[in-house]
Length: 200
Image (cartoon, rainbow, N blue to C red; front, top):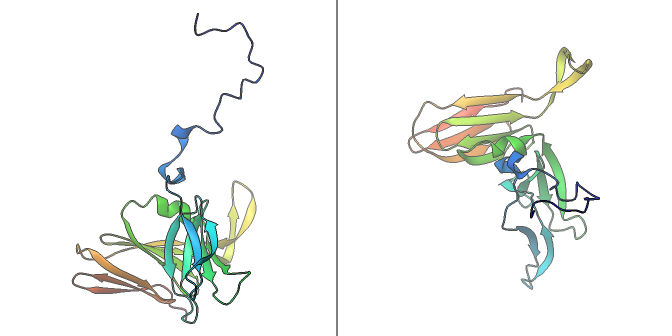
């Protein structure tokens, strides 16, 4: 008797949630703590601007231009966007300078990640695990030959490549730095140098 009703439900979809929480992956769940990006005035030490980051997870920071403040990379949906803060500009304080396609989604699946970096010219981003493995994600580059997507029947103009480097050590990784041409990986006993771009 308590499970039935004499009234018809005029809106049967109302009771259903917009998505099934069981279908969400761990990387899609919003953080319970909120995070904000704040700008402080150096002389008054008061907050001048506050931006709620919401679900835009902080990934890493990198110095692209030594004359500017370090850039910071945030996850936006599945992508990773690199932002450059400008101390001299009041209106456009944070400039979007690079996008790493699908990197936000990829990094969420890496459970043993320890360091994250990108090249100062944005040609690649790299992720380093606690032991041994380094993942390099290159920006899309034009194809030298014709390549077709069979499912969609269209020509593909650019391809992004992923590479994995396995270091010959079992020592923990202590440091990680990216330049335009090389990656430097520091372990307890060795400094590994990985050539990433050799064209320059």
